[in-house]
Length: 177
Image 1: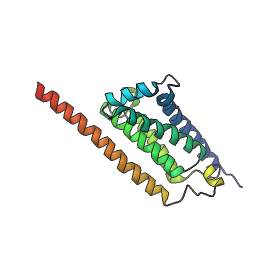
Image 2: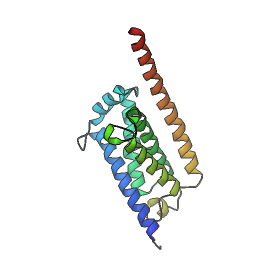
Image 3: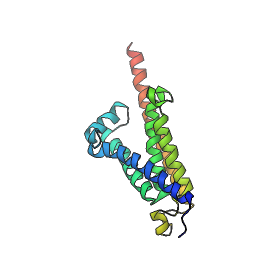
Image 4: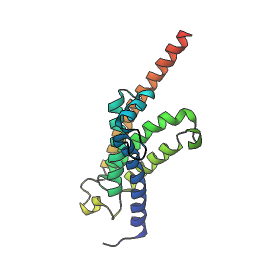
C-alpha cells in the first residue's frame, strides 16, 4: 500500500476531530473530563428545550462519542461523519442566539466541528483506515448522500420541534405579561 500525504492528512484530521467529538460525548455519557454525566446532560438538554432530556442527551452523546470513535478509526465514515454533523447541528442551534463567535457563546465551535465531520464523510477516510482495510463495505459512494440526507432530515425535525417549544414558551410569557 502506497501512503501519500493526502492519506496522512486525512488520518490526522480524523484522529483529531474524532478525539474531540469522543471527549465531548464521554463528558455526557460518563462525566469524564469535568463533564456533567448523563443526569447532568439530561438536565441541560431539558433546560435548552430538547425534550425529553434523557433520550436527547443519549442521542447527543451517541452522535459525539460514537461518531467520533468511528471517524477516528475511519470506519463507516459516511454514517460516522453524518451522525457527528447532525449532533453538532443540534448544538449549533443552542448557541445560535449568541451569534457566531465562541467567545460570546456563539455557534462557531459546534458549526466548525460539524462541517469538518461532514467534510470527512464526503472526502472519505483515506487508505489509513478500517474502511480501506475492509474493502469499503461500509463506505460506498451512495452512502454519503444517503447518510447526510437522513441526518439532515432528522436534525431538521428535532431542531424544529425545539424551536416551536421555545416560541410557545415565549408566547406564554408574553401573554402572561
